[in-house]
Image (cartoon, rainbow over all chains, first blue to last red; front, side, top):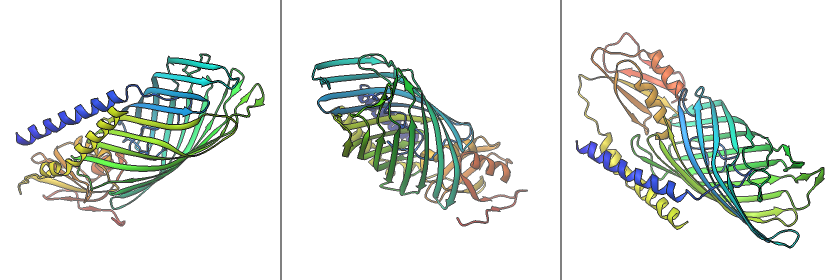
Length: 304
Length: 121
């Protein structure tokens, strides 16, 4: 009875913390086009991909909030909330659907022509369908080495003709690869993702190349029925080609951003919280473009 | 952002309190007469991943309770009276969860032999 009471008390405290975290992320969001790399599959880095998969027949449900701010002559802020469903077709092949809930984008400041603008749009974001194939795994004691490839498609659901637009309106394709070493005390990940952007309304965003290296450390060896914290540091970047409008490459588009991203995973049984902040350390952007200030991600996930 | 910071700190504080509680929880009383199968599992490094192992092993016929110790990688199945689970069923369940079985041992007479994978553990 004492143990049951202890469990109930801890579940209550944990639930309160989860509710508080979700509430805190309620105003968060994803800027259109910045979220297809997001991957809520278990023990993946926050801003990169991982080869970890859910078990055969297992379901996962996640809710993720994102907040991104960019500043230049124009200040741009994006907030979004999306859900994600994950299914384990086999222990090595998973399908995931990231579906949009709400997205808000604001732009304030001086437009390229010199006019003062103050725009705000709220609506649906884009959806992403992804498949992951873990094609290699090897075990040594409690340590696991595995590798996976990922393919996906972004389905344009967001309003693309608004002011500001919430999405590009294009159907984009994703392809990525990832490897990791999972140990009792530490994790290492490497991943790369290519996003091939389609054309819509005569405009084609430049293709994106995302890369991520991450280290995760546990302060203690976890127990099966205990809370398991994992602290992460990611080094990531994105390089984008120029945007093409009506056949003309735009001078103020494309470039590279490198960032460092501290984050955390906190899991209890089949529940997980993950969060992190991407802080840029290098901007090499072509032309006059707003620079990334930060991106914050917070998500809650459960497997069943 | 302030609310975010506060809640993250709260979550970490909860995490810091976990080991003492979970260590108490995991102490289980096992009588000699209890039929148990010890399954040594490779690659199981986190409780979130091990949850899948639990879901699969708990569904085997005759399994009454399950305990997992991540540090040793051993899952202990407690069986109902006269129940048993085949090595094949156990291996399938663990592999469906994404892991591999290194060893299966029983503390009672069984038609199934001790299983040991011929690799490093």
